Image (cartoon, rainbow, N blue to C red; front, side, top):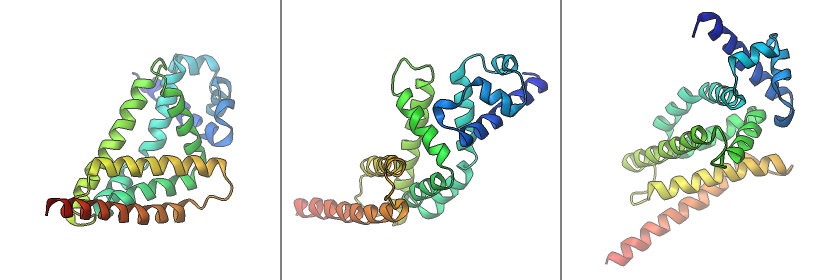
Length: 201
């Protein structure tokens, strides 16, 4: 890719993020993005001949901006703090949440052109969360005996569910709701460990 082509793609992706912040997911098209990027529609289609490639570039750029901070939080504060930080980021940038949820729904169809990429990204998110929980158990941030993969499933389900509710309900207090749910879940994790210890006696 030449420098000119790279610059064109960079401008288009930046314009795409702006367009999704300014309008509903279903209202954004090549015309709207081209207008924001100050390029022709032909330029847009030359840079991104397949719409799904443009979508992947946008969501990847948008999400990658926070990745270093998220890794630091996972390492220093743990998996629960990581998920909470992701929720907090979504509160500050709701357009990203709407776009992500819309894309996950579309990409759940195996025939969708971007399904493979989104499924891989989702799987990586789950594995990263699982590894963070393993580290939490080793460091004593979470109870010993906690099953990291099962807890990762619960945390990811809580994250997805609360984000969806926050878009559809006006009375959702996202972060306090997350904190309350995690407090109850931790009681369950400890109870499960106690039951296992009792069964071994």
